[in-house]
Length: 150
Length: 114
Image (cartoon, rainbow over all chains, first blue to last red; front, side):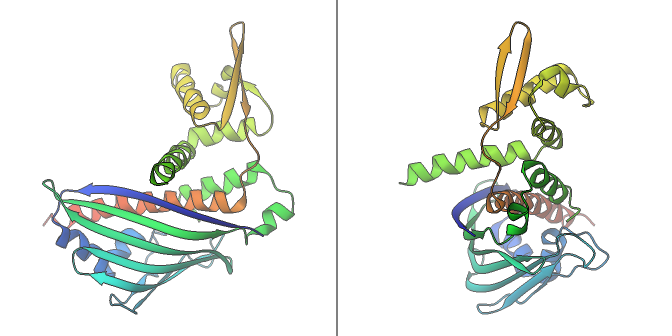
């Protein structure tokens, strides 16, 4: 098994003030609507927005792989910054442990949001490599997740 | 150090965006079974040859494939070692976050209506 330590970031510009965008992260009912990609009847997303508060979400039992997300908020600056520690397991195996930082910056057009993740991404899903599955199956798995089947 | 990280992050971004397109994934899947000409890659795809050529150029630019031209035929070959599980997972994970941030935009806009 190996560990991939990576930092990556992505950003968006939203035409709304930071307080509005921040609220969509802080209110669990609102967050569930954009965070939970499973599009099931009822979202599994739960969150308690305070330092020390936890989040959880999972894909439905029948999906493959079953993905479970758990996180703890470690730093919250209202309207400006959220830092949490996240863990994701796939079919019960830990796939990543990471630090997620979200910043909300006021701009002329609204809000510049930056999502940064610094994580340990794990080869714990070693069943694929140990069975000798190659690029094709990995690309198929990628395709399934990107089309939200997973 | 920061410039290196930004350059590396840019390469990863381009690779992930390259993988995010279903037609390009179909092409890569075909190439994982062996080299193919651009015409052979285009055959099952519902788009113009010119569009396929653009996809091929993008895949070559990010290093996922290499191509050689002999006469009028351009042959494409899958490049590089198979993706490690962690790298594949990271690619999926980043794509998930791109989707979430797009959905956040839609949720914010819905909040405007009614």
